[in-house]
Length: 385
Image (tube, rainbow, N blue to C red; front, side, top):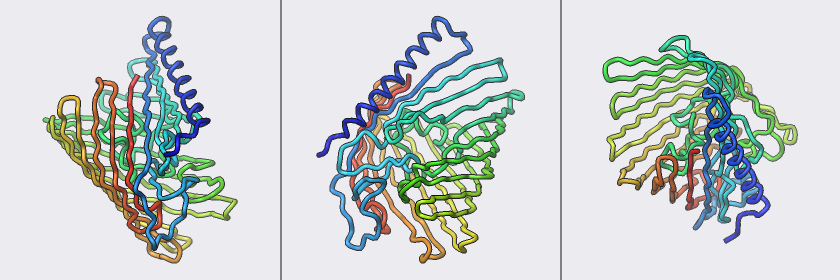
């Protein structure tokens, strides 16, 4: 078994220690000097893992490595190019985030969040927006936010908020996860129902996309123009249902390989969750499509995840199945990828703000062109502070 790369590990630990030091200092300042309208918080996930008993099928047509990681391998975080192989590593999914909020008055507030990752140790701004409440039901926000494409999009970096080590990558993880723009949300209650509806629009540009490094060498620029979408979430007792629609114009360029493509993206999704105190069920279904009109072909990608868990005091065993399947209208221009995965997670809640999780996955490369078949072992420590 290979050890974690020592220079990286020292750098990651230094980033985490520095971030924690800043947070502790900020919290101390808040208690002693800062006005009460300042709020500081953070989250931390140390995730270690490796693949085992992996194989490359005889008819495998994919690359022998993904972003420099030798296959057979497993992509756990598509957006941030987090890939495991048979070398034990902290890099693919470990992260630390700091969040600050400032309340100007009862209606107007500011929020910011910075995240450092094992796969990208440069601090990145995930949130930077202003909120204004028009009244008790309506709220508008301007600035940088997450694209709310999935149920856990707003808090997918916060490990204590879900039972898996990380949300299913079969759904979660595209080249753009944030946008700069505006949103408006309406909240209401009627009977035993709570309803939230929002609309959003904006744009995102990445000059060196980590997601695209999984497929292309060199620097790839990605722009999502004209992002437009809406989502609605209904809560009724133990039942939560959420639907979403997103569209965008996508432009991808990479000068080193003469890549210049445009596509119209559309995405639909629905999540249905049931929480019966001890038992709970989590499910989510999406379909994304990209129409390359100038090239004359289209890719569709239906994906789903379904899982069930049972709470036994501080312990929560959870089983899950997820699938991602691409379809291409022109195989000469694009060969689709498909994979499916079964997993079992055991979570132990240390307290209300921290948990330890152990997860085993069996990932099958259905189309035999992306990573091969692998088993994955991961252990995570998640904490809020």
